[in-house]
Amino acid sequence: MSGARPLGSLLVRDGTVADLPAVMTIENDSFTDPWSEQAYRDTLESDQAAMHVAVDATGTIIGHVVTYFAADEAELATIAVAASARRTGVGRGLLGHVLTTCRTRGCRQLFLEVRESNTVAQGMYVAAGFVAVGRRRAYYSTPTEDAVLMLREIAPTESPEAPTAGS
Ligand SMILES: CC(C)(COP(=O)(O)OP(=O)(O)OC[C@H]1O[C@@H](n2cnc3c(N)ncnc32)[C@H](O)[C@@H]1OP(=O)(O)O)[C@@H](O)C(=O)NCCC(=O)NCCS
Image (cartoon, rainbow, N blue to C red; front, side, top):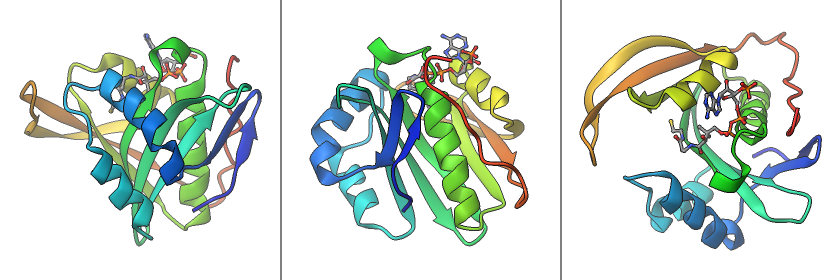
């Protein structure tokens, strides 16, 4: 797990069990097929996973992201931003923190799946350097939908991202 990192007025830090009520509110508001609280607890207990949260200037949690690590590969498993804080750079800040964490852990490839219809998230991923590399048929339920598989190559010498909320 990596430490706290200020990104402009946004702070991204490691998540804790105490953050779960706020995380679950964002999760349930953001997805038709949300993760359970137990899934987040399992993530927090795993050495092969990390949960990071974005915190605003008032200390309120406004986003979260979960990443899994396996050798030199990582998977961005979920990311969500509170509806009231979207389109202000929070998602970009969380992604930048994940990429820095991946680099620190020696990961060279970051994968993710995204609903085919989720063009907002795909736009964010493309802007962050992801490319579509495949498709998983009927990967999602509620409703059933294909996933687009995306990949971000991570060069060991790449400069750390310096995204800022509100920029
Ligand atoms: C996807 C999500 C995390 C984006 O978070 P965000 O904080 O609003 O995103 P940012 O403000 O950092 O935007 C980053 C980039 O994403 C794209 N983007 C974000 N919102 C967009 C929108 N409404 N329309 C078009 N592009 C958008 C843009 O490229 C944007 O860069 P720009 O502002 O310079 O144009 C957020 O919309 C969300 O939580 N959605 C519901 C959950 C979800 O779909 N998660 C992804 C699962 S794979």
